[in-house]
Length: 325
Image (tube, rainbow, N blue to C red; front, side, top):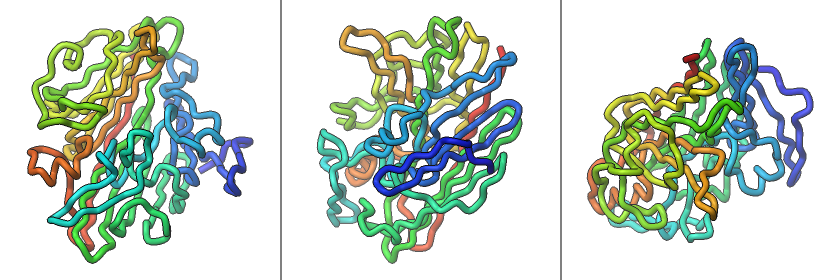
């Protein structure tokens, strides 16, 4: 893999080097030393290269708080764990809170330095072993493997988790891409189609009960402009494997094809203080519900939590593709 010429930053004694995957249709840059954070994803459309994601150009800001731009890996859980604690088989496990609301959010791999195993123009693979991190915010030993493959107009994204512990370990994972609402000035808004029939009732993004049927602003199954729904919701009950983001003005469509393990999707489409929609929508393929470990402990159905036996490895992939319309 070729590295971008001048994309380096040294913060907290760490050098961040952007690596690049690129073909005639897609271009992805990422930071292996910072959780394999995607800093930019562009597509070639009608002779022009367009940013599909909000670019993550400020590496120092990413080191402080790697959210709000690009995309990053969520593991060994996605979204929040209420009170930064959970139970498994009668034992309580306490984590460090990592968000102002007192939750532990988005796992603990997104700001870690991954070991690069493979780096070519169209493929990337990296690994992370939690046993090498004395401050890893999770009570079980895990090994992670992350792979990206670029082929034509498709980017295949894969993650696997192996239980390197002597005890059973609950896990989940996901990805957090921040899609732009407008690719060019020709776009009035994006159309987002998420084939989810259920959504979790929640307070502060923590589910208050099992998933319920979607309705009104949470029903994203139809082809219509996203508008200003003010969403930060966890969806499930997927009726197909494909999520679509359509940009009618630019005449481009972005599609996510999900493996069956991705039983949940979080959609974050916030509004500003005046009620106007922000310029992005985060569409997050995830395997587990928000606060999934605690929901699993309560016996809720369909949490998506996977409990790994010692030595067991589990993972899944999704594909991002682009097409002209």
